[in-house]
Amino acid sequence: MLDAAAYPILASMPTRPEYLIPVLFSESGLRPDVQNSLGYAGLNQISPSYLASWGIDPADYLTWPASRQLQLVVKPYLQNVIDRYGPLNSGTRTYQANFLPATLATARSLSSVLATRGSDVYDANSGFDTAGKGTITVQDLANFVAKAAAAPAVKNAIAKTYAVSGGSPRDPVYGTDFMKWTPAKVIVAAAAAGVIAWGYHEGLLQQAWQRWRMTARRWV
Image (cartoon, rainbow, N blue to C red; front, top):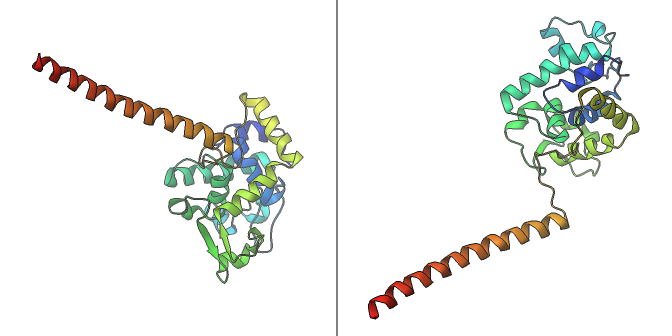
């Protein structure tokens, strides 16, 4: 699980703690010693080839505490993704960065398809497609983030991180990357649009009135 030194590091990550922690929980249960059948290891289930490129033995990596994995692997990995594709302002996009980072450039909506049944990516990660529709979408990642964000261990980790850094968390699933329309937001947006429209038409009426007055003066 997360050691005490992990929380200050989580607070210094290039994406917000409430965006990253649910992803780590979904991947490993916040356990740094987890490895899957394909050799993906650690908190964020990083590939063995990525670790090898950094000169890290995957077997040794599994013995590292969470704080060391976060500082030496997870943090630079995320920073590299952000440098290439832009900021990660939601748990959903952070999961996308961990799962298929290259898709960040093109799969920007919740309905965007990341993998299709029959592909290696889909077949290895079909658990994302809980509806059995034959595709993995960005929304599927959002659903996993939402489920993880509700877990007591995740809530506790987020709270401990903000106890170190100060501040307060945002929506962990959609953040500021995606607009989720609720009835209240629709009403507010419609009201705002009505004010703008009225202001526009009122401006036209005022212009017409001023033109009429100028014409009327010439008649006198």
